[in-house]
Image 1: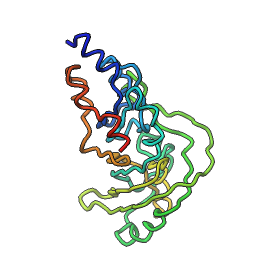
Image 2: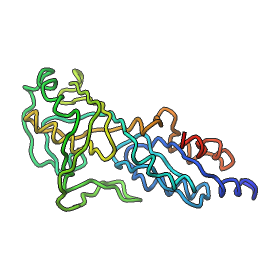
Image 3: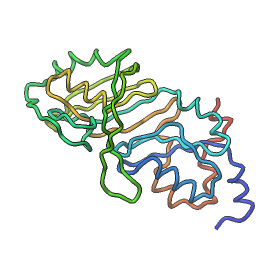
Length: 241
């Protein structure tokens, strides 16, 4: 149990915390749980992450929130899988299946042919529907977010390859500017292949200079003694370097 001096340290803490968020929980659940467990005054974040995705989630503590733009504006890296042959309402496998197509003709050459179209400047349109997971619920709910206008994004690197051991599954990795919607990219990728595709799994591996390898698993945070918390954070001066 923390004493008053230790609580004062947390009250005055200005830092970032790298969390490895598991798939299946909302990013807001992570944010609220950390704030509550460690009696923090102000906890923001450097970019949301879908409930179905895992990986790097940057929490900003107290005065670190003044520099949220520096984190929000950084490039992101992702890896994961697309499921071929399905078009869903949300662009990922949490949505309702709208249409299915045969994908048996898709081979490495077909993948290589469309990959260049997903590098450089690309226009995306956010799907009208998104899958959300409410706190306290084990199920995803489909939310109608209305019609969205196309927007310009940029992909620095994009690689995709069929997984021989998993028919109909494409492994991908990408590095892109902020705002890129991976599930929208999955949907567009499938459309270009002519067989549809949906995002099956997604893991964020990097935001700017921060890497998921340096993050703390969320379950370990929940088990951590409050006295050890400050030593796991990144001081503000290092965040800004």
